Length: 292
Image (cartoon, rainbow, N blue to C red; front, side):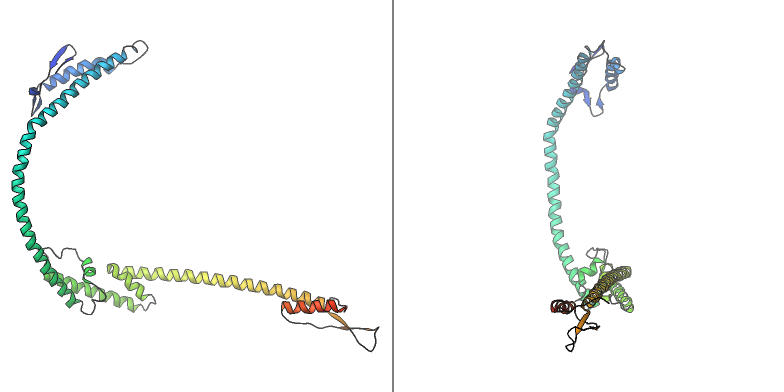
């Protein structure tokens, strides 16, 4: 590739590209900077507006020439190493296959070791948590550990000690919860089992008590509203009864003297329907009545 930079023509070939980069790169870069120096502080105005597209095309052309040379170099370089790369991969696979063969066989022994160790761990669990196995299972107890039971470096003695300590922790927590004599004991124990943290149990107790207070307050408010409605309803009924009583005050005629009227004052008590029935009877009987 040959390109003109300023007044100098610089030729580039693949042979000029070494593991240390392009020979005389600083010289080429300097020429390139000199070539574009004239454009660095250029301001486009009406006087040079028509020349601008030509300058831009010239710069883009030189940039593309260099980019094309880079792409050609990458393709040529890739072609040179393709065969060698394939051969090196083949050599590496020879050792990898041998290593995998060993790893497969080792894994068989390791799986056998883990299976035997797990059986021993299960036995430790059954001995330690005798009578508790219907409440806690081994996976739940393991969840509280560091998760390294199956590692070679984790001994059975350390696992046994962990289970014994965990059992004491559980017993202590449940004993503390039962000592509170809370009606939410079962819920507190369930919360405690999640992390074996007594704080979780106390938080559950507070949560349930707060919920109970809210429900009680709501119930009291509903009962109060119901009582107020009942009182209001009774007042309405009493007012209606008084009205009926006033309307039902009657004048009774005595048979001995057809012209003489007598006044009889009394109160009637009954349901709303009964009082309305009496009122209708008096109105329809032709008796004269007045309010008192």
